Image (cartoon, rainbow, N blue to C red; front, side, top):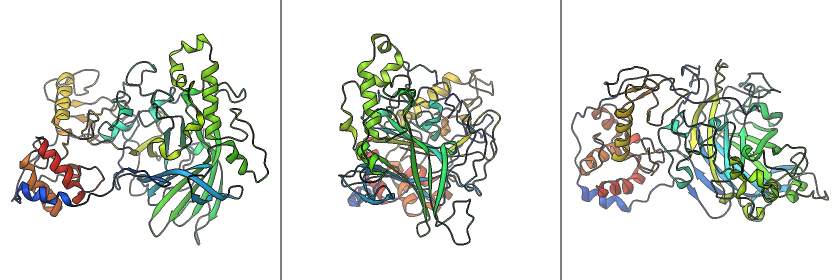
Length: 538
């Protein structure tokens, strides 16, 4: 893959600021009734630890169009090309029944020698065809395997250290470089000072904030068509099209789809033939189940070279951890290479700023980090354009995990008046700024973001290219006055009990966008407790 490709992000369309008019009868309810409802159990959202596997839920029906092309006019028809909507990530240790024959059939097991990661998507999504990102595959054929290709990057921080690992050459492709396009900053210490808030964040220096090139990932799983070398149809739809992945089918695709973080490349020395890179040939299983209308993409990858040897059959000798991915390869081997390389680095190498990415591995024990359910994971998912773009843009991003709360600009997990204040200050300071504001009017209280598809801005919360105070949505602010207080209670109950009436009486506002305070993609009884907590904070 050509890692010097310059991919930025964006959106479609421009609009003026929104105004909110309250109209109609408003249903009243006392605060005491809301408090009485706090006994209702909340719906599960997020991650649960326990037996294998770790299961992570992402909100359903939250896929959106986040273009990356200059002009934000790259063609896509959501009626014909599905927007990949990630529903679930499962990850843990896995024990195949017969790894040399079928690595995907077996059981989740604490003693398993493999890491298994399942991505679950709504509907049929296809393996991606090539988009011309590499010198050896310049062809643009993203729909080679069907009309709904899914592309993306799934990153794993295995040592729970954000200072080790990352992407130096093309962070514009990754989660930290794109999550702000979804209207906020994700909550958590791993993202503080690391998320690119706009297109100016990519300065190429690992030592300067935001540290968008220092994600902490040790390995990533890549969904790019140019990395696919072969496919095998395991179950074909009756009267189906053999070249297309369709409903009810099961395919295996193979290629160099599991990579160690490229930020380690200049310092990993154990394998002379690999030039520091660790890109493993793996198999991915694509399975669509018609009863649920969901596609699961599965990766089963060896944690150790012992597991890797078992893929070749019983009695196969286990190769030493030599740092070379072209023979037996595994998570442990890739990490041993990091520990070895950090330890033997000379004084001059240690002075290089980029050495910080690997330095933390010097005193680590790789075997301590072979528990997939303890890895921190991020996901950036999308789909290619219908036609290649002259500016080199290839992807439309559609979903991320973890998802930010829209309008949360400080990463505390909720949109509050403090976020509104930050937005208003940003507009006041930059209205009319010739570098940012294309309308050139410094007195209209809005910023027409210049080339917003490539130079995105987190404050453009609704992603229309215009940054105005109306872009922010304060979670729990049901009466649309940018404050959460007791006056929001009756509006919240109306939205909960009669969402259609809420829309009619609140200027077509989306009740889920404002009332889904537990951020699970739904407005239901699971939001009551957190809504009440927001009100009580005032």
